[in-house]
Length: 544
Image 1: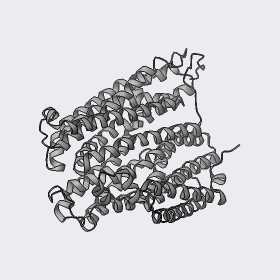
Image 2 (image 1 turned 180 degrees about the vertical axis):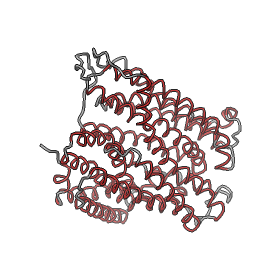
Image 3 (image 1 turned 90 degrees about the horizontal axis):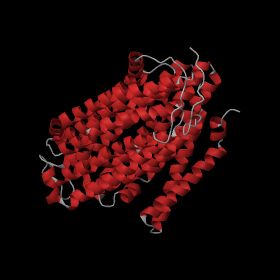
Image 4 (image 1 turned 30 degrees about the horizontal axis):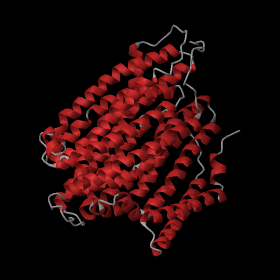
């Protein structure tokens, strides 16, 4: 059925192309991550390793449930909205939005209740106490709010308008940082007064972690409020078409698209559960090469190590992948369009553009973090020197995995675009199994370094399997020489940054000056080499 294009109001629904939309989302993700770091880094300095183990315990349960109910939802709504608006079926797009809100609000409510019911048994099983149960309970409503936000973001993304997603992410990050840090600081400053509000919690660090994580829940509620206000000012296009899909058909298509993505994201987040269980269990059973710092008993050492690893090393590790993840949203529509039109040249160009862009971003970041790990952690966590020292070596082991994860994210979206929506799930399941086996093999001998090394091994294999599957499914022929030039430029970036750091330290420069000088020198070398080696003009330029 062909429908007439709407002549209704489109205030605020300006479309963006792949590059512009991806740039908007990457800038938004970078801003959100900066604000997230503004939240997590001071929070770690307040809570320390033990407190962060309670905080991370709550996140480890929250993220798999959140991933299953929310992650694939934006993509599913965006896909159906884009299909409807392409035919001028704006009434159908609005119906998709309404049905998705009803269905997934119920799913979000069920997910919130599940987390709430599991709070105490989950905390007791994984940490040996109920100190983390309050933090788990505080984050439960975020699943419900997240489902509503995901539908709204998907609707506007389907209209090729990335601004609502970007702005809502910024609003969410601001509320999380402000509310989370204020509440956590308030609890630690008034321990006697607030402990009565946390039954079952005897450690003030458990109450402080719960207060901090309440900021996460309030941020998701803030995002819902943002969209409620925005709908007063942005009017959806109105169409005169009479045909709309049935509720059953909409629900079926939403689930068929969202479920594989959500399950894949669930598997991805299971690695956090793997780390929590294996790090605490293995160190409790086999001990650790790292001695317990002053003030930490031998019984608390496993929680201290896990909390430090999850709160510091994995926080720094996740900064760059969260930015390149936004490339997948733009790549999905670009690759799907090229695939549908049968334009092999556009398909190959879009593939190279997404993969090379993620490589250009991630490689120098990994090189810089690797060589400057002690300085970066000392600067970010000045009040937690024991935790920072513990995480220096694991952070370096994580860098190879960080690059592979950055490149894998666009590949997962492109696999969906070429008709392989289940492939990321199978690949991530295999990767999680490898992660579990390697953790059990490495941690008894290497301590927490083993968990970091197994993470990198896991993501190297995931990237290799994803790339092989995508090439077979799409039939594209990739040019690998630009990636080699990026790796070489990244190595030179890291080497020059290291030499600059050594020179700055010999002159007695403070740590922030050492990092700034190293980043400036390494970044300059990297950009110059990219230009000299013709990486960007050859592989990232658009076609006429």
